[in-house]
Length: 382
Image 1 (cartoon, rainbow, N blue to C red):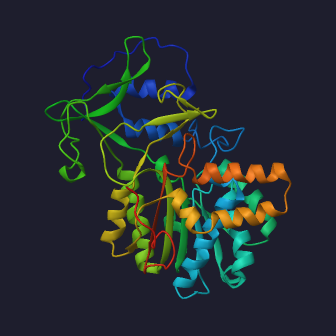
Image 2 (cartoon, helix red, strand yellow; image 1 turned 45 degrees about the vertical axis):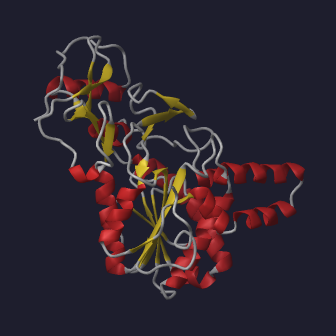
Image 3 (cartoon, rainbow, N blue to C red; image 1 turned 180 degrees about the vertical axis):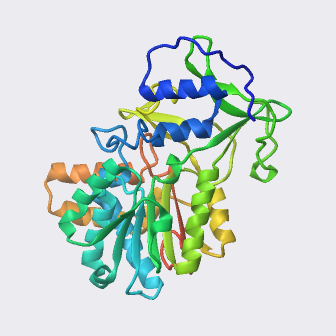
């Protein structure tokens, strides 16, 4: 039911990746794809999707996440986890859950912190990883094998067993597909991926038939050319997590890059070999992401009756949990080079400069009741 501004006839196309050829075939058969459909294929196609057959994290991959920068990040999250468990009455059957656990580095650092700071929690807790990638699941199992703890892997949140939970997700929502709408001066038209005359992938605008974003999603009246992003997948995931916590009890901590207030803007981007890339170039071989609308997520959790923290910057969150103090203790036993490495890690995690995560990444926490520690006790981001 989607018609493109211009359709391409089947024809000879340039040499391309297997996934690009698959996408071209789909477009030739049924017309341009929504950005959300293209996004999902690039990351999750069972044969050629980016996350299905590769290890994207670390220096050898395409990007580095906060847990890979320093153990300090996971230790601070571990402190939050301990406090969240205690705030829920220290239940002896708590589920410690990470969604999208990467290589297992964050979970390993959290478990190490729990072993030191709350052994009673770790002794009675069950550990759960929600992971769809078989490649990453194998790496996670290897990373966590040294803890000699039962770690259960699930492919979907719905597979988690009942009971109170403390849920952590770092860089999860940015990996879920978005739809994009462009205001043409009179109405919104959905941005799609079509084919150029030369047979290459290009962005096109679909006709105005259906697909209009809800009026409530608009931050203010748009100007011509304004881009509005929406993510039904993110909303559905947040609603599932909200239902789980409201029903079973517990808390959730969500960290991602994005904005604290809804706004217009095109934030779709690709990362390959630690550099920005064209999102339409070599699909399946680069990570696709976009900025997370934290205001929209916060509203979903609030509607379910959960206590929702202010949206705060990652740097402020980590510093308020004791990042500098812990860094000082770690550096005390190291030589000058070791201390310099820790200083660089702290700056990368909490700094506000170019290439630093402190301001770009936001933090949102939710719980069945407020927790007396950051981010619940912190001031909201602008």
